[in-house]
Length: 269
Image 1 (cartoon, one colour):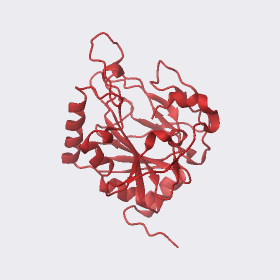
Image 2: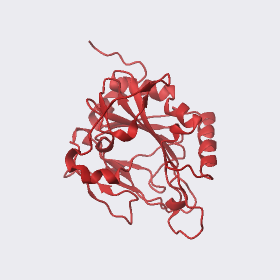
Image 3: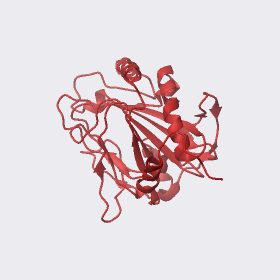
């Protein structure tokens, strides 16, 4: 049975399939962006054990100590849950999957001036969605570019197998893992405006450079999704959610994968 696109153009769908990613512009309007900004500005002044644990002292020289990423905010914040299930995003995902999506994870990155980036990696190394794959929806809250540490992608690596990562350079990356791109393939910057959403395949190699600015944050609201027909996922992502907010439990994929269990402790997503 041939699937008929409802929200994406044929060109957009083809880019996702051939390059591993596609930007869909303006999926969040100014009012929605303002609500997200306000929500995470409030969160930034509190501690949420297990999800957001900033260091409010002035002693640390690492800006990510004061502004670490917020993990799974949908588990404790209604606005985060609402925008993880943002219908325009789910519509695009349905065209990409050719079936309804399931929401598995939310995150918020503040990425303050001077913050380290995130070494190149593959998302489905962590989510372990099977059969099928995870897809990320990476929403720019601020403009994202070369200077403030916007995202980097390695085009066409969605067809690259999930591999065991190497260790990253801790001076430049706040996460532990690094996946080396295939020979003759390089990471390219993704330039985005507030409200744009980058969708990318779970095998696509991607990451980011340091925020080199002195006065610009690079805030982003990032969610991961699985296809409705998936049966397995990593243990950190239960429960998943349908568009109506109802919960779904999948079979937990065992720890391991291409590295064995020793890398599980570094779970950075």
